[in-house]
Length: 150
Image 1 (cartoon, helix red, strand yellow):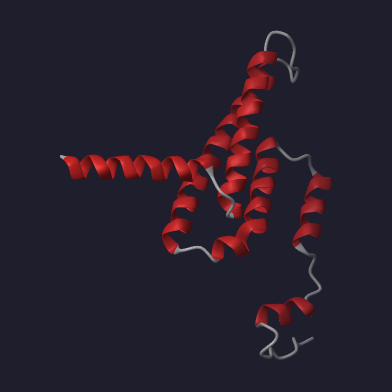
Image 2: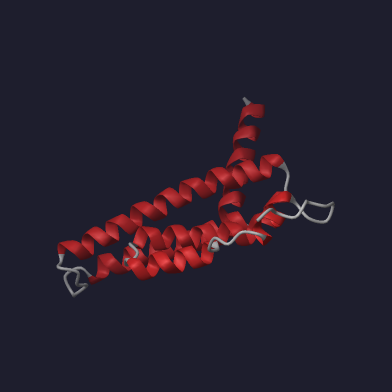
């Protein structure tokens, strides 16, 4: 089958998608989930990807410097989320996949940090006001003021 020609109202990708018999991304993700259990890192990746997709249109309307700041901070936050997720998985594996009194406090601390970072990441990629952006701006302004003084 051939795709219908693209018109002003339809992009080529939309036309191809209309004629595509392959499964959607959601269907592929569901099939993968059913085939094998997802690791925590994979779950985190899907969650962060969804946050990014949800905020894409708002981010696209921002200035290039603002988008760049947000992207750089989001990447750093994402890396830290993955690090904490790995630490938590390792902690649980070391204790035979059990969280008990011996590791509960550390596991809770890692989970709490991860959740906090997820919220910060969501703010960054959704275009919402961000504490990290505010702090970065404040530090930059102080550095500029200091430079002007000296």
